[in-house]
Image (cartoon, rainbow, N blue to C red; front, top):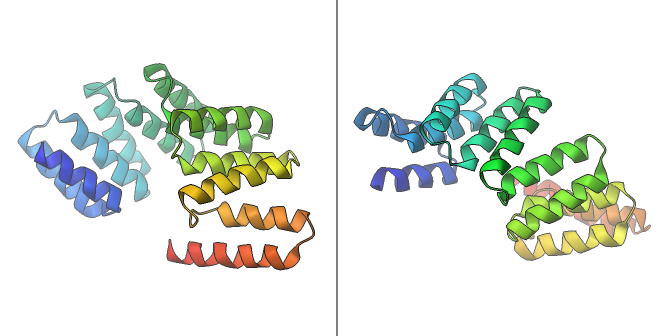
Length: 203
């Protein structure tokens, strides 16, 4: 499974063109290789080629219907195409495969948050954190939801936990800045916003 390890490394490193090439080579060796379709789909998704990403991911799902990540990524394609309802269905389908699959729970929570259902979102973010205590996006999402609910102390709690995992995660300092702003600490807020800008420039 040397090919798989290489493909996973390229995907994780964000080398999407190289990853696609490696996937194509794997498919030449075995046209029914589910992981090659899966990671090709992931790379195409990252490159914004949504139609092609969808074709690869659907093919991967046909070959391996037990992988919740493939199903979640199909949901991500629909989300990028602006079809939230269909995306929601795919995230729920991923959870039918694995009820504790944290990225799908997190994505569901984000959709709830965007829809203004902040309390429901908080419950889902907490569930995602339980399933994967290192999933930093879930902490950021929970903090943002608590912020929207006006619960600054709870928001701060999740920001602190996120910073313990990765102090330079995107979104964390921005939320902290808003918390400081709401507490009438403008200097601290500005410091956080500047830090967030630095992080985003590096990303």
